[in-house]
Image 1 (cartoon, one colour):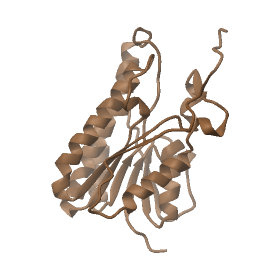
Image 2: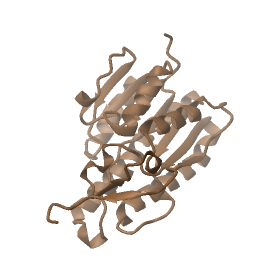
Image 3: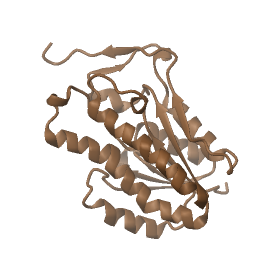
Image 4: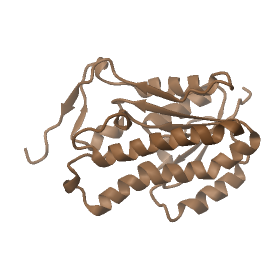
Amino acid sequence: MSTEGKYIVTGASSGIGREICIRLLGAGHEVVGIAREIDKFQPDDPHYRAERIDLAQLDELPEHLGGLSKRLPAIAGVILCAGMGRFGALEEFSYDQIRQLIDLNLISQVFVARAFLPLMKRRRRGDLILMGSEAALSGGQRGAVYSATKFALRGLAQSLRQECAGSGVRVCIINPGSVKTEFFSTLHFEPGADQQNYILPQDIADTVLHVIQSRHATVVDEINLSPLKRVLRFKKRPDE
């Protein structure tokens, strides 16, 4: 199988990122998966390469990304899927928790884009796809910090869309609703059990393929994906 292009995917070891890697490989692309725990996803495919990078370690990130960008001068695109969820009233967050959420969900995404956009601009071609959220469209109760990071990502995408158009680089943000992944394993709520209450990671991967396979002169600026019915199930807390 001849490879069609090399893509970098963050958050590659699980959930949406892992499914995107699988779908890209199946479509004949090379994939460089960035994750903290690369052992969780080891596909038997010679076109996959794992890079162990902890995006939460911001002080070390510029050096890691700089070295990786030098080893990968020709890339077709970057797909930013890494992130975490933490919800609660603002006063229930410690200052460290606020910082951790903003660092991973926003600052690390900006760092990765900063590292690889120049490579795509020099090639006059490429795709930058950010994974937003329905929380980037409307703030919700007990989601102030998480929504703030996703609103900021949406603003980043909109600004980079204008900044990069003259260089042939397309920028897209995908805003999914509840996706059935491990994302909810540490949270006090999750999508309802009915299949109409959630999106599957495969749905997001299909959307990513649609974006990168579209005619190069056509830009998909933003896509919102929602389950047919928005139903959440709240788990019992340990002290209940």
